[in-house]
Length: 150
Picture (cartoon, rainbow, N blue to C red):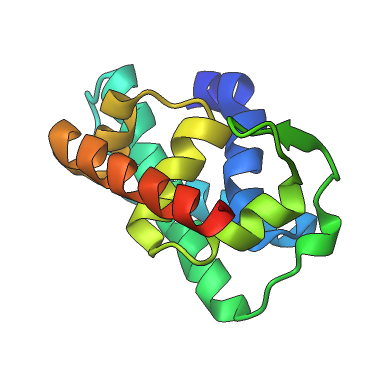
């Protein structure tokens, strides 16, 4: 677990920030996730399986925290610009606002893939879905995004 913490902490923090948008809340989510993981730790689990298992705990804990907040606080995000296919630029804040219009499972897939850099196979493991289901949901959510951004 120490190796996971050292190697993955920044990624864990970014994932939680994508949900709760608050540094203190993100740190609480990470701490709660480790507490849950330690209480339910399965001995003999391989590191790849452990990582996916832990990220499932982390994401579910972040979603729970986000639901409790019931408010959007986009002002704490950096105003970086992302260039889209249509040569239009959008700030991170604008993209997250658009993502809020997409259903939760699809939004999670987009965030994990495009903002966190997870491969589709890893996303399938984290969300406990079939890889083809993840691909289908990604395709549909990208189409939704295109329609919203036009």
